[in-house]
Image (cartoon, rainbow, N blue to C red; front, top):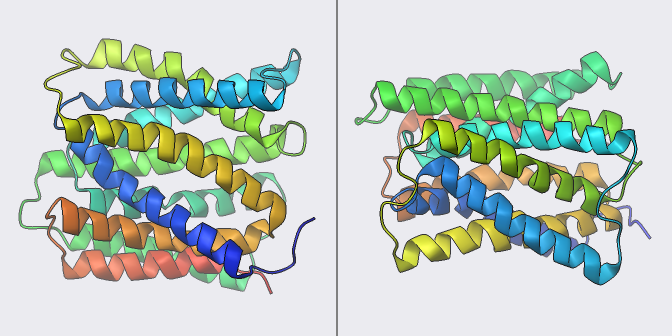
Length: 293
């Protein structure tokens, strides 16, 4: 039964999830020290897909559909795969703290897309959130760290492209899969069908997949694939069945906060005034976009 408010248990759960999602960006940077980024994304999808398939078999849930829904699942996987190619490759060049803010342009892409294609109208508060978010991104670009160069700019652009692909994936799911398939199937379609896409990109774009193996690289890969890509999103799907999704989504603004913290604390990234200002505006924008009376 869906509750009409977020209780202490629900808030604790979403708080833990946003911490896990935020720290995922530092974990990607750690794996980049030993594995090529796109190949890492491929391994992530393979491991998480295996966990998802095992879970479906345990609960006796149908793995794949045999009608047009399977085609829609493939498109979702294609978009999802390209998103992670851009995100992981971009983080080879730019900071985790910058990436986590830029990738969270996605909720605003969804809001604009839903207004244009799904007849979900933007009200005054959501419009204000959009304005604040894009102003925040402008401040992130203005507040360049002292090490900023052309490669970091390329990484920033790839993170923004990933945000648009993430938004496109969400919109496609809303239009063609939401309420038609079990959430675990949507989750599985993203992972399984993204795997060959990411592999092809790794094959053509990367020469050396493995540079070195270390404990931190292996642990970071396990964290990204098992803890984040599988377990955390499984919990998220359970939460959106138990609580109002709009109110849950409002708390996702915490993810960029923890992401910036993890980049600064673990990766020793420079914390500029523009980065802090941009983070604050993007977080307020995310809250406004998901605000419900």
